[in-house]
Amino acid sequence: MNYEEIFKTIPSHVTLVAVSKTKPVEDILAIYNKGQRVFGENKVQEMCDKQAQLPTDIQWHLIGHLQTNKVKYIAPFVTMIHAVDSLKLLQEINKQAQKNNRTIDCLLQFHIAEEETKFGLNKDEAIELLESSEFQELKNIQIRGVMGMATFTDNTSSIRKEFGALVDQFNYLKETYFSNQPSFDTRSMGMSGDYEIAIEEGSTMVRIGSLIFGTRMV
Ligand SMILES: *Cc1c(COP(=O)(O)O)cnc(C)c1O
Image (cartoon, rainbow, N blue to C red):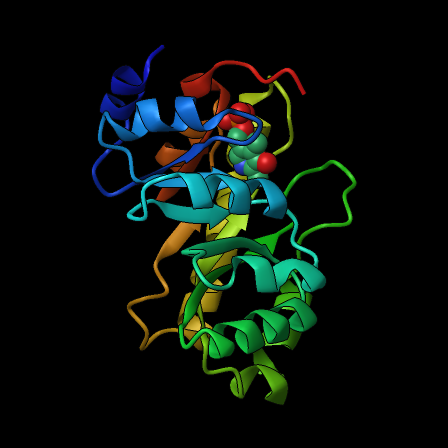
């Protein structure tokens, strides 16, 4: 599949994040020249190196786990941070955004897969974060929605169930904490192998790498 073919399968209300991790700037530029402006990376150093070499109208999304001590490197330019899973990280993003005189869009990462991983919030943890007085003080971040990754499996019904669970979390947070904030509108779910299911289940943002750029060596 090529970029145009994939792009055609994505409805206009869904944002395509082209995940360019491990791929050279030439490959990114080729997709950029076809009109793509939103790119996703999962490593801070790699994203900074590429950002410095590529057109300034690219919107960079950090989609991977982010360590607090690295926020300062991306704060001047990052458009969205997908994998926020602690108050501590959110406080650091707020602090660095403030230093750069900007507001940074963030998504709360939820743990929806069966697989054991230390990343991602559950519902109680999200509630605790959003109800904390420390959270209320943060003025330079904007929570735009949720992000999650389904189990890596061929079992489409379990993938569907996991995406459905993420949409349930989104709806709960929307009603409870963000009902008067239209900017809380993003459900980042779906990758190369499962983005069509994700869109059927209500994704508004898909993160597609290997299908666009080819398989990764690492
Ligand atoms: C690598 C990555 C993707 C894209 O994966 P593909 O299977 O290559 O589409 C999406 N989301 C996250 C968080 C990733 O790390």
